[in-house]
Length: 350
Image (cartoon, rainbow, N blue to C red; front, top):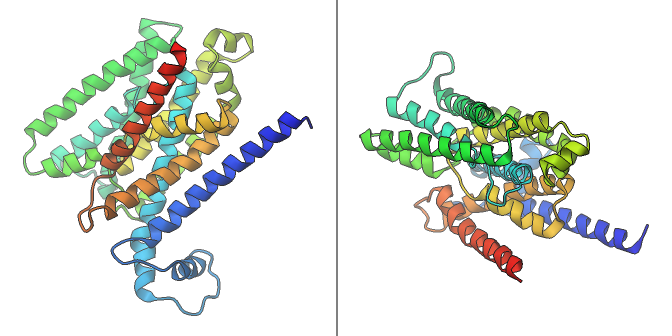
C-alpha cells in the first residue's frame, strides 16, 4: 500500500475513533449529569443490569428510575434526532451542491411544523392513535410537502435541476411559514405550548417517541448509505453523473425522499431544531473530505453526539430552568457556520 494511502487510511480511522469517542462521552455525560448526578460506575451498573441483563446484584433504585425513565430515553431520542438531521444535511448538501442546503431547505421542516401546529392549535386527538396524533400529523405533512415541492419543481422544469428544486423549496417554506405565523397570532392559551414546540425540545418524550422515530431512522439511513456512491457522482454535477451511468432523476428522488423521511420524523418527535444539518456536515467535510462513504456515517455519529451535548447544556446552564434545545443549537451553530462561510469566501478571493 502506498505511503499516502496508508496515511489517508490512518487519518480516516482516527476521525472515526474521535467521532465514536465524542458520541460515547456525550451519551455518558447526558445520562449522568443533571439535577441529581448519577455516578459513572452506578450508571454503568444500571445499564449492564437493565439493558444487557447482566447479573448485577444491587443497584440504587432512585438512580435506576432516573436513568431508565427520564434521562436514557431523552438522551437516546436526542441522539437519533441529531443523527437524522446531520446525515440528511450531508446528503442534501452533496445532492444540491450547495453549502447552505440542509434538511430545512426544501420546506420539509415547515411542513412538519405546520402539521404539529394544526394539532396544537385545534387541540384534537385522532381515534386509536390518541397521543400520537402530533407526530403522525408532522410526518404526514413533511411527506406531503416534499412531494408537493417535487411536483411543482417538475412542472417548472421537467429536468428538475437543482436550482428549480431549491427555489421551489424556499417558496413552499415561506408559504407554510406564513400559515404557522397566522395560527400563532390567533392562538390564545396554547401560545406557550406552540412556541415551545417550535423552538425544539426532547424533554419528557419517553420511550414511546423513540419507537416512533426508529423505523423512519433505520430506513432513511439505510437508503442514504446505499446511495453514497451516487451522491459522490451527483456532487460533481448532474451531467457528469449522467455520463457515469447514474439515473439522475431516480436517485435524486430517492435521496430527497430519504432525507424528508428522516427530517420529518425528527421534527415530529422534537420540534424544529436548526443548524445541526448545516454545521455538522461542514465540520466533518473539513476533516474527512467530500467522500460520502465516510461523510454520511461520520455526520451521523457526530450529529448524534452534538445534539446530546446541546440538550445537556440546555437543561443545565441555568438549572432548574430549561432552555429550548433549538436556542442552544442556534447559539452554537450560527457563529460556527458564519466562520465557515467567511473562511470559504476568503479562500475564493485568494
